[in-house]
Image (tube, rainbow, N blue to C red):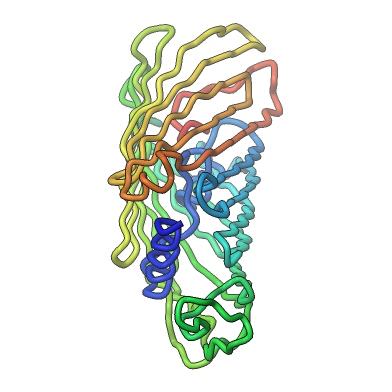
Length: 338
């Protein structure tokens, strides 16, 4: 119980100082819109849809639960030649802890993708606009001035100057992405994105001008075809916002179980490390145009004593619809594992 209280106080302090980060996932490549707006429409196919679920800290506190979903479409025009663009929508919902601190996000994004250098390079740019709503349940919060000695008295006023239990504001994001096909067996990709470009005001207090600081994300990866059966896909993510940083490094390995027309099956397994926080294990399956992933975070941080090593579980699914199913989906360029 003592460890739980310490955790809650630490979280509350970090939120109060504005050092916490936005919604993010361990399977960061399975949420392309959240990773970088330049990913909008960047895949081999015609339509793409994805769902994502995350449950964290359920072993010792009311869990933090996140839901996400997205849809995007690729557009090709004769005037663009081999270039193309995409448009998409994404929805996110997050509820954190005992105070039921909720975040709801709706996003619209546009991406433009240009081929260069005999089609070996693909340069993408994307922009994204969001509407964010956040709310909190004050009835579930306990404040120091509501304690008499060591006893809590809910009848006492908390004397906090909250203006509302709900706020809403706009957000702007932008990003760049580069993909390079070195050979049939080796591809590279790298991206850079910026979030909260408009520094929106975020505060539940009446007299506060607290604004969200800009968050940056840098990601890079590669597809290495080891042989006809095995593909290795190392990836790295660096994200930072004010004094909070996140660094993830690891790799997926794909084993081709079946690869014939109309039937493509690839078994996947990924292992990643999030700096000073968790070891992430990600088994998955690629079945034709579906990609399934389930991950588990093994907690390695100072919270390990309270969590007993249990961190978070995530489930993701992505489906790409191809208007020409007889041709299948070619994956000549890496597309962040769909």
